[in-house]
Length: 231
Ligand SMILES: [Zn+2]
Image (cartoon, rainbow, N blue to C red; front, side):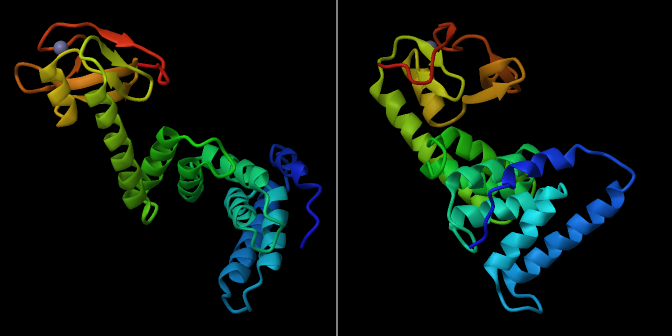
């Protein structure tokens, strides 16, 4: 196990732009790649502790991919003492910079609530983002989590009274009438997170995609409600 008491200094180093920046970047990249060699046993025996050591040094020099790899090691406890707080911190830093692998791993952690509060909506967004950026396998996980959420949402919609058309910041929460309920279940009308905020997308009379401002069947207005509203 490696003593990593001074991990917190990693971030401060990054912002210091100076003339040696290029050398530092090259050195960081070299360390990152050496870390990968130890991680996968390329030309050297697999050694997770050495991999972690390389990644940690590369982190201090500002390497973003090293941060992601170190985060994954902390999550799995390979070569380091398992530490979910550190895993989330390192992966979060890499995910904030749209590292597809970090988004993917963090997405899976949000799905099960490992080191973070369980949040399926956040999970599916991160996984879908990773998939969009071409991370291998992320599309399958994104679809899997999306299917669970859709199932849950449909069960809720069927169980709730058909009174008001209600949406939260993450999904449709209640339908106003039977035709709207059916459209939502068959997904001819869908929830979107538009640039103006949460909204419903359906078809206008010419069959073009359009943001709805009310129910096209009964005319009910759309109400925004909290996502944990009790029915
Ligand atoms: Zn309606």
